[in-house]
Length: 185
Image 1 (cartoon, rainbow, N blue to C red):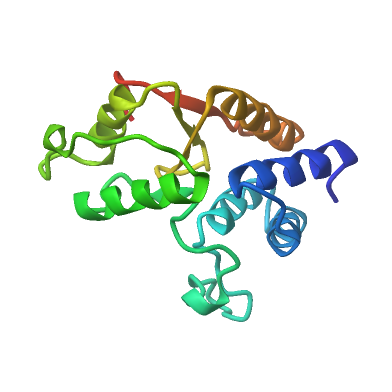
Image 2 (image 1 turned 90 degrees about the horizontal axis):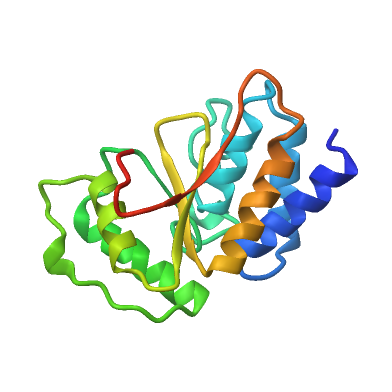
């Protein structure tokens, strides 16, 4: 069971990531933490729920649920991607989704990105092009990237909330970071 501070932090974390409260998403994230197979698997599950890549609770193999079973539109408020994916066109689409979902106004000089690079270089380049906005990434105990774009105040809040959610976990220290132009993965 989550303690009160974790529960409150999780609720606020979900609210900040999703730009408002969605009770069904919060309840699913809480369920993921409380019913995790071990103390490590709950955090990645929460991050995937928030990115619209939740597993299907009815699938005994734990495969990703179909789009119609997702509580959050996939890759809309929050992006989850491994280092080898997505392709550049999808990356730009995901960034446009974040802009729309969060009501952000910025332009990207797409000429500074290359298909020969991967998400690591793209995030560093995107960071260099953002003014007064920050890419915040959350460690999900894997090589995947879990990130969104926020203003400074929300970025600081959400990082503190993530720290409060993960503080009781022993054996692994979850972290979050602001991605900068010198990001190396």
